[in-house]
Each structure stands twice: as C-alpha cells, then as structure tokens.
Image 1 (cartoon, helix red, strand yellow):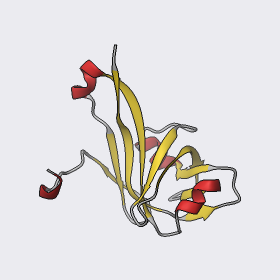
Image 2: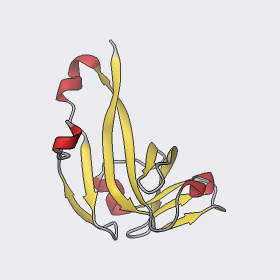
Image 3: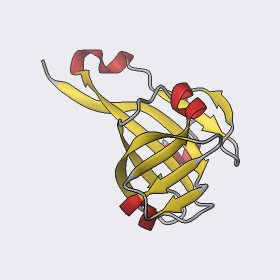
Length: 126
C-alpha cells in the first residue's frame, strides 16, 4: 500500500518564550499544549519561524506552563518573541488520505490554548 505524508498536528503561531543554546536539544512545549495538539514526547516536529522564515526539525519535550523554548542548535534559529508554527506529520494510506483530518491548535500571544478548528483559507491562498 502506498502512503503519503500529511499534517498530523499543528500549534499555530506560538510565541517563543526562550532560546537556550546550552541545552542538549529539542523544543520545550507546555504540557497542556502537547496534549491538546495530540503530540508525543520525543516526536519529531518541524518548526517554521514566521519572523525569519527559518524552517528546521527537532523533537518535543515537556516544558513549563505557557513555554515554547527552542533548545540546543535549534536556539540559533529563533529569538525570544518570535512567532512559530509547530507541525508534526504522519504517513497515511493513500486511499485514506481524503478522509484524514489533522489537529490544528490555535494559541494566544502568551501560548494559552484558544481553540481547535480547521484552518480558514483566505482568498489569497486559493
């Protein structure tokens, strides 16, 4: 059976609370957001920095309340206050791809959960 990689989960426009170059690696994410986004500890995620355009991969670890902290080498790609999108992907059977529904979590500027809903498309993205 053929598979296709599709978005599994996303935390949309989180605010970077810190960048710790001396930590061994990963992204520290608020435990509540990990749960809401259906992410798993040590799961690979891609980080998209809306401020710089940087895109890179790392893995999830549990952080403090409201925390989104890039650690280790990933800290070189962000600054405190940057807006990031955190995305995980999953391989889906090609014949089931049309039914796949990713989890999309929206947060406020303090990384508090706001809602889970499908993304809205604007006229420019059509």
